[in-house]
View 1 (cartoon, rainbow, N blue to C red):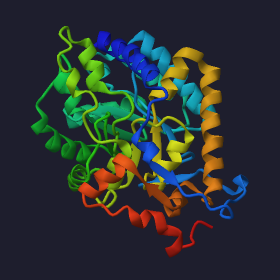
View 2: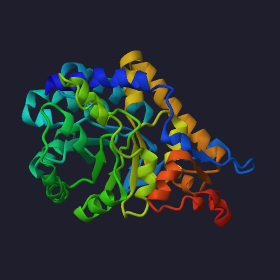
View 3: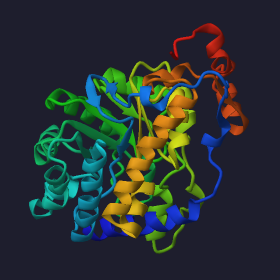
View 4: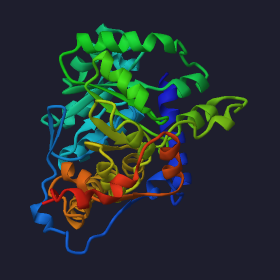
Length: 356
């Protein structure tokens, strides 16, 4: 498992470099420019509420890694930068530390370096309720992520495929822990039907975790001797597709998966995400540029998100859902096939003027 953790970082960075400059479904989301709607960026607050959780930023560092000396160093860099930029941060799956307590410091560093910040622990849906409690205790976590990764497990050489046990396990975890539970996909997306099921299981928030970012099917296929699952690369729903599909599913939504720059953050907020997770971009800066480079990058993202919100007249991240949005191309086709009327998104300002 430790070797796999290091493999994931190495392969994910290779794929991040390969993805740069490639189109995304997020490019099919266009914010309509109204030239007199802008406000002073100084009026924009970045504070948000996610199911009662108070965050100082709509951008959070999503779960990535941990469990080895190398990934522990990466986590230290991520945590220091998150602290200096006042961003929430999630751990990678702590399962390796639950099974081998000697690995715990490689995760605990997140809390040690971000002692007063919002920290999320992370376990798989196949873990027990007791494991979930131990994960929260390990990080003194403010919330718990439970990740779903069926496609990854299927391709992973040592993967666990008892997928039919996951729903009752999630319900048990929700009953057992005393912090909010966020269920996230790791890159294949959450459909509206899935989010509705999660709501019924007692989950507080859904992180759609769509395609467009790290493709763990490809990552795990690269670890296979035969590399025989290459054709499954790209499996799943994109992040904006999930946001459209799950908009009426009854849970607050977070968006992650393929977030490349601050404009993507505001696009996701405009489609209904309460906050937006970034992983591979911050990982690349952490590994390639180091601590100060990552601090600078995270602060730039905060400043640019604030600026783009001001450009569309949104005084807060929550106000972005009143911006006019055009949905085009492949994303519009998916919406039509799923029975989602995206034309109403293009005429929001004709209905309400609540941006200011």
